[in-house]
Image (cartoon, rainbow, N blue to C red):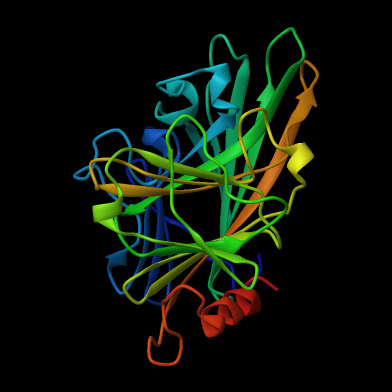
Length: 286
């Protein structure tokens, strides 16, 4: 065991990694959902009081057209089997009928670096080959600033209205404005550098992952997606991995690294086009 690895505490179905003033918690009984990522008791994720079904950070198989709505409970919200091996929390979901896919999640935290690593696995438990991409959906409070390095092409719309962004020096910025959101809005885009970030007040959330090419995206999906609901209750900060073919019995893994930091807003303004903010994120994902 590495000396800087964090041993999770267990309280019923909730497993919590605590390092310094940072708390990262997962509920195995809620689809292995990430329910808390907080610094000094400020949770950057939404809770069930905001939306009883859509809160915290969940994981789906992509594309959504494979299952429409709602997401398969065995992947999204049903209990996962949990096991601890020292500092590693492993969660295993049941096979989703119709899809033949089962999801696994592994969580570990590095207290010295101040980061949590999440390894997702999609396994084909069916008798036919399947194609799928990994998809992480992180719900934060309505408001704040979401940004990512723009990849090939520009932001594009799907069935919903296009969410408004500005692009400054190759970085796309979504500054939440409730007055401009009169219906559900969503953005689809190719990213670059393998990260997306969100600021809520003086909290900075960074998620980093392997960058993918536009051709690797699932049909009708994208590496980066941002959603704001018409009810002005939450924003989804979403990232997807490569769309791959899985033979029966095969699996694919995908890793996302989570970081939470407190900002000095005087030195690092949380405004569209803020070069110091982009520089800080780039230093964190190196």
